[in-house]
Length: 280
Image (cartoon, rainbow, N blue to C red; front, side, top):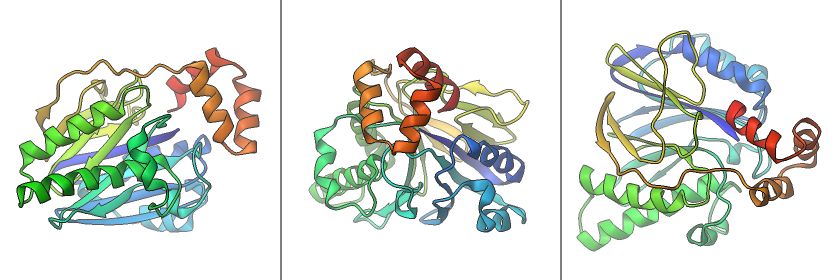
């Protein structure tokens, strides 16, 4: 249960206004913040396991103009994993072709056996980090087989296959950047929005301004390069709807404080659904 914000632009654009509004949502997402400024094959990531409005480091960053082409921002409500810097998003890894992949995620992987082996390999404890490790392995395996780096078409096809499969029965709003393309996927309604403006595209869990934000298409992977949609994956049928079993799974894994808060404020499945739509 987190919030995501991403920018893809043809040119450097100022984003402080959007970041201020985005990080102001931290009262509902108090367990960490992250910011990744991405240029070609480099991701500069700052993150802390504390409420964004209480972070001196984030205050310092936002006090100066942030003018970028590609950025990810994240605020965390810790349903899986402790409140620790290793569990804050975004995450970044390098494939065997030297390409840097940066990922952030909003949702929960309730069951996917392909991720299980990464529990012992990851630095933190989140399913989000395991997703990135799994993706990197799949990319490396195919590159080793082909004996070369994947081209853009091959990257998109592989990611589309992986994410379509991961979305079955799981909550999977995810953003990935590989130095050239930004890949975005959502599979539950009213949980991701986008704004097209001045050769830029802004994507956020919630609209951040009074501008003309639109709901992001769900159940398909979208590939964006410098604000232009280059790839539109096939629509899959793996839309997520919370179940009693999933709600109980979350309650079994969250901290006692958050569990009590969820039960006291939302109580049953109907309230949980309402919460999911309004706060994720």
